Image 1 (spheres, rainbow, N blue to C red):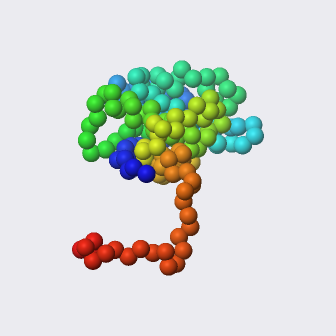
Image 2: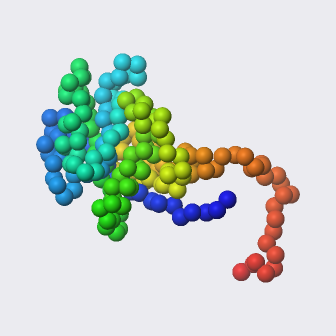
Length: 177
C-alpha cells in the first residue's frame, strides 16, 4: 500500500439561519462554502439533517434560495448552517472550488442526509480516499472529523490479519536511534 499525502480541508460552521435570513449571506467576498439544512422529515422527525449542499460559484444566500425549501410545508422551521473553508494559507480559486466540492461529497456520503440520495448513489471513491475534513464551530449533526481513508475502499480488509502476541517484530540494532 502506498502512502499518499492527505488533503486536509477545514470548515468553520456557523448558524443557525432561517430561510428569511438568506439575504444576509450574499457577501461576494466570503459567503461561499457548504451548507446544511435541518427540518421536519415525515419518517425521521423534527430538526433532522435533510440536505447538504455547496455554493462555490455563487453566494450561499443566492444558492440556497434557488432550492425549493421555501415551498415546503415546514419552511418556517428550517434551520440552515453554513460552513466556510478556512486555514493558514489562502487557496487559488480553482483549488478552493475543488475543496468545496470534495468536502461536500465526503460529508454527504458519510452522513447520508435524507434529501441527498442522488449524490449518495454516485460516490467518487478514488477521488475521496485521501481527503480529510475537520468540522469546527456549529457543525451540528456532522461528525467533527471525516476521513476518506475510513469511508472509502482504500483500506478494505483484504490481506489484513489480527496481530497476535509473539508476532511483534523488534527493530534491528541498525534501526534503533
